[in-house]
Amino acid sequence: MNRKLAFRLLALLLLSGLQLPLRAQETQPGRTVESLLDVARSNNPEYAAMRHEADAAGERITPAGALADPKFRTEFRDITKFGEQSATLSPSRVGSTRYLLMQDLPWYGKRDLKREIAEMDAESARGRARGTWSELAARIKTAQAQRYYLYRNEKLTQEILDLIVRLEKVAQVRYAGGLAAQQDVIRAQVEQTGMRNELIALENESRQVNARLNALLARPASAPLAAPELLRALPAPVRLDHAALEDRVRSRNPLLFAEESRIKAAEKNRELTYRNRYPDFTVGVSPIQYQSAVKEWELMVELNIPLQQASRRAQERESESMLAAARSRKDAASNQILSDLSENLSTIEVARRTEMLASSSLLPQAELTFQAALAGYENGKVDFATLLDAQKQIRQARQTQIKAQAEAQIRLAEIEKLLGEDL
Image 1 (spheres, rainbow, N blue to C red):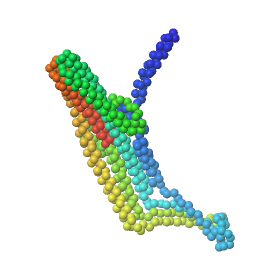
Image 2: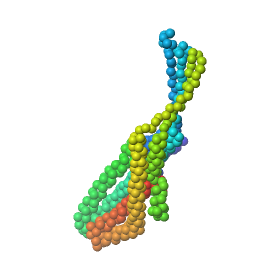
Image 3: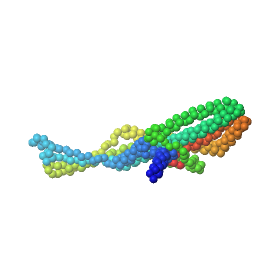
């Protein structure tokens, strides 16, 4: 009984030991781009900083439209009572004590304009935060596409290496039988060495991409990532209509949203600058105390006199120029964004057609060519160089397919960055 129990425990330990790597693989981000975006959304410090700046800008709205704090002043008058007593600061012993409570009041509408300017600044900050996330997400999606390309290329190179090892064995058998030259065996060995060098280069590139991606995720550069086994499905061609996407970009692009908010803020600032032609006021109430009783009350009104016209006209011209600059910046950004959209849509369509051609035509043809070349070499009808060329055609076809898939994902990421949202 004890031996059976010990055997069961050992079996459980072995099973748990096998499951640990699988569970660790499951918890590592990197298998899908969504798992990477989830980590970046909560960990990336640049995006966190932009969110905090947007929150800070939102908190400026209330102070911008609030009245200034009231001011209080106290005046002790005739503290010696015409020299009849020593100086004192006691309100009941001085000649009189004046208390003045004052409040600054801006011209009608200025507070509303300041609050609206702060609101537009907050909207612009939120747009910049969205733009930061769109840029970050695009970089992560691009890095994931690069990881997928390198991962699939590495697997393909290993498969080709295994194939060349088998071809070397075929060449050795034929050489041993006097049916092939020794050069065929040497050629196969040279090809293997080249494949191993390519594997080393691909491994180095993968480490560099992983390090860059981990930096975006705020993880250690050498932190493990799951193998990028899945790519996102490309949207249907009908969802990539240029006119529809152009309208969406105009209304949803984070950069254009931020620039539009800047234009509105500049318009409000121009209006506020023109309001500065009118004076601001300060009103106050002042009770005056004699000994221990308040016997007088005063009211006061103070206003600034806007006499510096040259200074105000310069400020008004400045506000007009800032508004024109904001509009020009938006126009420039819009032109560049729409140009980028058109370029990426064209490239994603080319990548889609290239992948389809490679999958449906180029790759099957290359495989048939290789099978025919292999059979011909085994029968002595073709030489070993022809067989290697046929193998290279298969590799080139599959590399074309993988590259087209990765390129389509990169261009999709760029389009989503322009949209500020996923398609």
